Length: 232
Image (tube, rainbow, N blue to C red; front, side):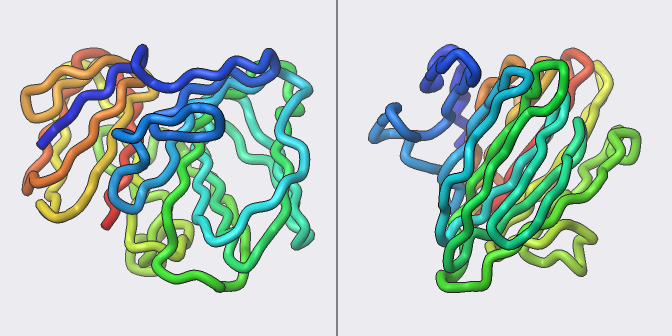
C-alpha cells in the first residue's frame, strides 16, 4: 500500500516565529486517521524565523531526530549538551527517563527542518544527545543511513528504536531502489523535487506512507532531496 498525503492536507499552525506543517496529529492538530505510522509518531515540517526558537521544555520516552534542510539549529539541554546542526546534517535526542532542551535559530536566515519522533523499543533508558555532519555529496544517488537502532552496523547516529532514518539526493531522471520488508512502515518525504514512487507521483513535501511493499522504486522527476524512515 502506498498512500500519498498531499502537503496541502497536512495539519498547519503558523505562530509567526514558527510555521509548522504536521504529517501526524500533533499539538492543536488532531486527525484520528493520522495518529502515526507504525512506530513513527511525529513528522513536523518546520520553518523557524531568525532569532527565535523553542524555549526549554521537557520530553520523556521518545527518540527525536532533527534533519536540518536550510540554515542551522542550536541545541542546549539539561544534560549539559550544546551543539549547532547545519543544513544537511542531523541531530538525535533520546529523551528516555526525561530531559529538558531548547532549540533556537541563531542564524540570520529562516531555518527549515524535519523533526521526526519515533517510539523507542523500551522505556526508561538513560537520555542522550548527539549530532553529526553528513555532507550532501556523500549521499548523491544513494541512500545514506543517518540514524539507526543498529548504529555500529549502519555507521549512523544511535537511536533506541527498531528504525532507520535515511537520506539521499537524486538528480532529475535518476532512479533509486530500496529493498523493504512488507511488514515494515516506511514514510518518505521529498524536501525538494517531485517524485514517482512505485508509479505514484508525489510533489515536494508530500508524505508518502508505505507498507506491504517488498521493493520501493523512487524516480526523481526534478532534482530531489529525500528523507525516509523505515520503522517497525
